Length: 64
Image (cartoon, rainbow, N blue to C red):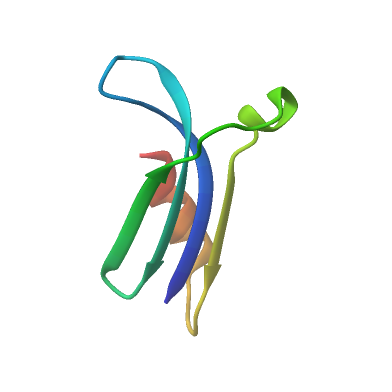
């Protein structure tokens, strides 16, 4: 499975900041995104690519 995501998280200073995630299999990379247009800061996007993925299970895991 491959995945990419952009979402808001909390940094080490307790600030809400946008993050980028990408992964392949069980290897993941997570980075702060330096600066975004204000309208883009609140947008959360996840993309999963792979065979036999279960949409309901992915949603349940992300929302738990």
